[in-house]
Amino acid sequence: MTEEEALAWASARFDGPAIGRLHCLAEIVARESEHQNLIARSTLNEIWSRHIVDSLQLLSLAGTGRWLDIGTGAGFPGLAIAAAEPDRQISLVEPRKLRADYLRSAVAELELPHVSVHHAKVEAINVGADIISARAVSRISALFASASGCSDNDTLWLLPKGRNAEDEVAEARRSWHGVFHVEQSITNPESAIVVARHVRQR
Image 1 (cartoon, helix red, strand yellow):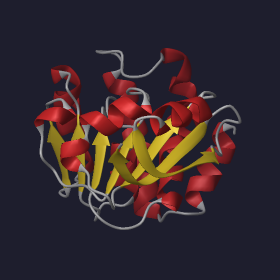
Image 2: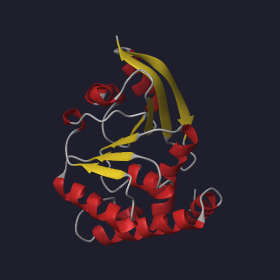
Image 3: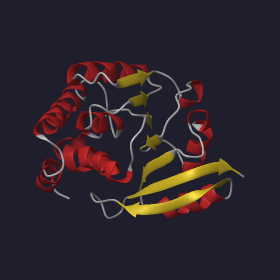
């Protein structure tokens, strides 16, 4: 997916104010990248395709309810989702202080009152979540274990992965029951999204 295709995709699905916030998010990321390594510099010119739309595609798989994003980092997917749907309750979890401070500043600049930032590891928080996402954080089985205090049997897990998604699902099945399937990413043919529900330890 090119930048032009990504922007067209987003513009066809979200209203003008949402697209404005997403443009602002792209500017915030570029500005902060001068001070800390938020995303690979090689992807700054592809931020809509590589990061923003890559995040927003999760919304087509999600229902309503409180969203918890683990290891939000530069803001993907959690902050992009909040910018697109500002009325949704979203908790961003980020253990690195500089990035947590950046996220708080970005939330304030984007005027997202329903977003909270937790400077902690997910194991240390207790926020009940209807939806949990995590992008490039850890393997699926480790995510299930670390976020068990924030999830229940009905929690929907949306986990963007690379070409080894099927292998990670097979590994997770050895320790976890659940309903799993893998969706193809719309932004990269080598990427996928693992969707899981009714997850519980064997």
